[in-house]
Length: 122
Image 1: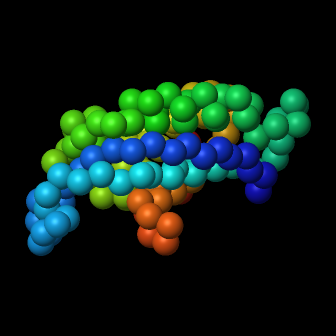
Image 2: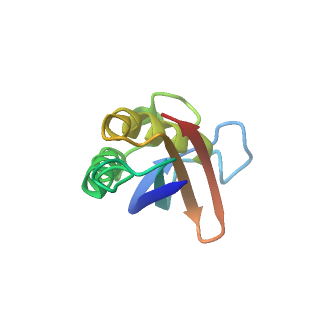
């Protein structure tokens, strides 16, 4: 399996209503997002997909999330790192599939040692 990827950083807010304080209060995280597009065989360009497409789509998603309340952007009351990873996967799926990627993995880090993610076919 061949792969290309990119990262983005942004600060955003969320709360975890069913958790005890301070998690149930609105708070910020400085997120790091890693995305990896995969393909079984390289295309005629020798690519999984165009890395410029990967970085541009990820930058657009990060821009939509930056300094926002994640519940508003993701349109769900509880946004975990897994939920956020799935939202980002959805945002990138169509353009990356159209450019040749077959799978996409998204990993969202909310601290230096804690993350959640998803890997799914496109």
